[in-house]
Amino acid sequence: MLAFSDNKAPKKYNNPRTLAGIGLIILSYIAGWPVIGALGIISTWMNRPDLVLVGGPAVYILSYLILLAGIILAGKECAKMVTTKAIIFAKWLLPV
Image 1 (cartoon, rainbow, N blue to C red):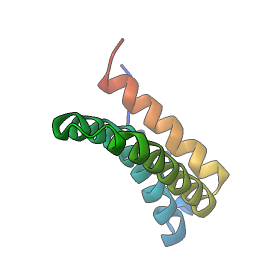
Image 2: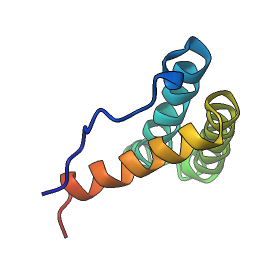
Image 3: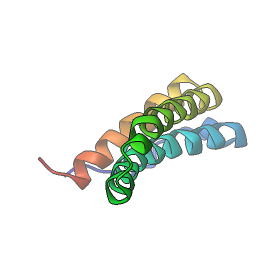
């Protein structure tokens, strides 16, 4: 079984700048594909394909910019740790 929280993060990740960066990285994962999927559902329901044709790439670009801001704030090492934890969590959540 994969351990999601091993609590081995160094203490240097506990400053406000790093925590804000981690929050932005997590927000970018949440604001990416789920929002694009919701736009697809809404555009289908409203019979307006332009919503997803324009809004989908716009949301994806915004999500990517949020991810970059989070990586800059958190630092390379911390962003790598967060991404690794996200992959472990995804494997735990969706066993293949």
